Structures are given as C-alpha cells and as structure tokens.
View 1 (spheres, rainbow, N blue to C red):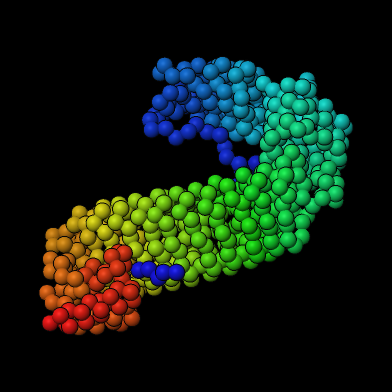
View 2: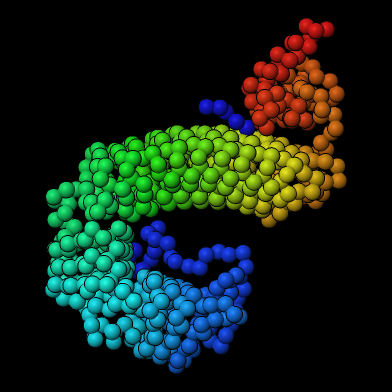
Length: 580
C-alpha cells in the first residue's frame, strides 16, 4: 500500500575491493566451455578466452591462436596462477588482453612469448614469477608493449622512456628507494596504487597528456604530502585525485572534470561539498565513510551515482539526484542511516544491489516508472521504511530487495512484474496484506518469511509457481512447524495457490466472481455501508478483518488501498443514496 508524499591493506593484498573493474570477456548470449590438453577455454560468439590451466601442467604451454575456428583474444584473470611447474608460455598474436594475476606465482616460468598485439595487462599479472625476476635483472624498468609493468627494482631517479603509454597497477608499489620519476608525454594512464608507499618519492612532474589517474596512485608519498600542504585539493590535469586533507565545506573549482576514486575516502573533517557542473565523472568510493558529511550538491549532467560513493556517510540527511542520472550504483548510499528523504528522478532506469541498504531513517520511497531494474538487496534493512510505491517499469522483484524492512506496512506490486525473488520481503514484520498480480508466474523461496503480521495474500495468477513451504512462513523453527502462516491465501479454485495452501495446511479462500461491483469489498453482491465499515476496519488493521475483494475498493485505481479510497467510497455511497 502507498502513502503519497584501510586502503593500504587492500593494495598490499591485491584485493580489488570497490576500486576498479577487472577486464574480462563481456557477457554474450552464447558461451561454451572447451578443453584442449591442459587448457580450458570459454567459447563465445566471435572469440575464445583462456580461463584455466591444469594446476600440475608441466613444461611448455602453447596457447592456440584459434579454437573451433574462432580467435583466442584474452587470457583471463588467474588463468595460470600458481602453476609452479610450467616453464614457458607461447602467446599467439591474436591475444590482446592479459588479466589480473594471470601468471602470478609461476615460480618456474622463465619464458613468456608476448606478442606486440597486447593492449591491456591486468594487476600483478606476472608477480612472483621467475620471468619477472629475470626481466628485472636485465632492466629494472620492465616494459611490455609500451606498458610499464614493474619498476620495484629501481633506485633514485627514474626516467621512464618515450613510448610508454600506461604505467601499470602496482608498478612501483612500496619502492622506498626512488626519489623522483620523470614521466614522458607519451603516457596517458597512471593506474591504481602505482606509487603507493613510495615514501621518499618527492618529485613527479606529470605531463598534460595524462588523462587517467586511478585510485591511490600517489598515496603515502612525500610528493602527495607536499601537494596537500600547497592545496588540500590535489588536482592534476582536471582530475581531483585527493581531498582527504580538506576540512569543513569543500568547494571544488570549475577546472575539475573528474573526481577520482577514493578522493575523499574516510575523511572525517569535511561537512559539505559543492561539485560544479564541469564535473562529468566521479569515481567509485569517492566519499566513502565521510561520516560528518551533511550535504552535497551533485553536478547537473552526471549520468550515474557510482558504486559505494556515499557508503557510511552517516550524517547525510538528504540529497538531490540530478535528473540526468540513469543509474544508481551498488551500495551507493549503503549505511547512510541519517538519510530521511531521497527523490529518484524519472531519468533513472536501474538501481543496483544494496544501493540503499541500511538507510534506517528512510521512511518512504517512490520508484518512478522509468526504473526497469532494481537489483538484490537494494533497500534491505531500511528498518523505518513504511511505504513503497513501485513504478510500472519493473518486470521483476529482486531477491532480498526489502528484506528486514521491519516497518514496511504497504507496498504495491506493479502489474508488469513476472517474478518475485528469494527472500524479497522476508522479515517485513509490519506487512499485513499483499496482492500478487496476475502476471507474476513465480514466487521465490522464503519471499515472505518472518512476515509475522501478514494476514492476507491474494494470488491472481492461477498457475503461479510457489517455491517452498516457507514462502509465507511466519517465524520460529520451520522444521518444528512453529508459527506457521496463520492468515488467508486467496486464489482461484483449483489454482496453484489452493494446492499450495492445502498442502501446507493454510487457510484458503477462493477469489469470487462477484468482484465486479464497485465498492463491494465483502463480495456479498451489494455495495452498502457494510463495505465502508469493513474497509475502514481493514485500514485500521483491526484483527481478523479480511477483504474478500480488495480491488472493488480501489477507487483511485492505483493498485492499492488507502484513506483516499475510503473517502471516495463514502462519497460514492452517499451519491447512490441521494439518487434513490
């Protein structure tokens, strides 16, 4: 129903926690697993990806240029990781991408034939391999196809040669001996944690050609400390890479077009931020755990709220999402437990998993019709959420989407919804009734588990599949039969709802065909004062009050019942009596 209105540890362990996306093969409609000798591949429509190597494989490994007539284009993350017996790998020139940790820990791997076609090398792709150690002995700057892979063996001043276009993740990580680095103007990208922990690194002239700087690239360096002393907003080529030294109100200048990942990470001193409209991109976790951030103005033109952007911003009470935003990222507002209001504009088409998880002060949500997808757990544990209106664009209710929303008393299921996911409404202890429309063909397991006050469930699809006996279970120990569902399941005669109810010993009542008479909520074939009294008692949650035909009371035709329907019902009854 509706009412209107720790970073160092991450990089050291190589854990990509909310920092960047591993480059993998895109999800394509066709995929098949293929095995050739010691190698495993995934075959897609137009290409093949190497995904695994037999752990005890020995000697030389030759990656074929094609499988089943399709080119092998990528080596996935961890494909050869810890294959300690292989000694050489031949990579064909059809391959353009080598994933994270692809050859990590290959202690005997001495030879890797790498073609010039490689354009991407993932984090720590060659770390702890014999090949990398040999390369560092030949030249402390290990460069593969103009990608600087490793410089941890360098000392003093480092001059990166012309031609290098990317400085790879962890390239100089925790190198305490380098003091300055000269970056050529061929470099366009500095990846995450590149210079992190280089505590004596003081001088890094950065050319204008650098257009991408990933998270924590310069953290824990003398250079960054010096930059923060000059200006707490550290901005390089229009990229705000660090603002953790800021205090109070932060006004970002219009010269900035990008706010980097982790830019204000765990800052306890900023209270507000104004982001100009020149900013078109904000990195993940930009304001993560800024616990004293009370307000922020987001730029017009922003197309998404990045993942984990405001996690645990516990003082943030309200925020205006620009009408250009189309996506709200995973965990974007998770843990914002002072957030009382959020208006989702009709430009938004998707809300990712856990986006508002644990927003315990949020009382109502209106999802516009533009939203076509809400992922698992999006509003999980919003314990003060009492009212939710779901837009007509939704075709599914995701798993755990409103799990443990203990105050949720009313919600509408849009007519276009076809499925309700696992534990979607589990733990919604204040929910008293639910109408599941005719297009819903499946309800996931434990969908309404621990909804202790749920007394009325109407299932309008005669063939709706109900997953298990605990779908409407009230609580206790299901194995002992404690607190089994005590309400009424309404459905059509000989429907799956009736079969389900009878199988589990629940009270079933048929949906009658006398439901066409407007206002006749008790389905006795007459619209009179008894219907008005019944609806009023139902709205007041009077015990043992059931509406045989709730749709007859939906005078506002919005798919739910509230006080407005009661007012219109009284007016209609009064009008009919005066006509007589």
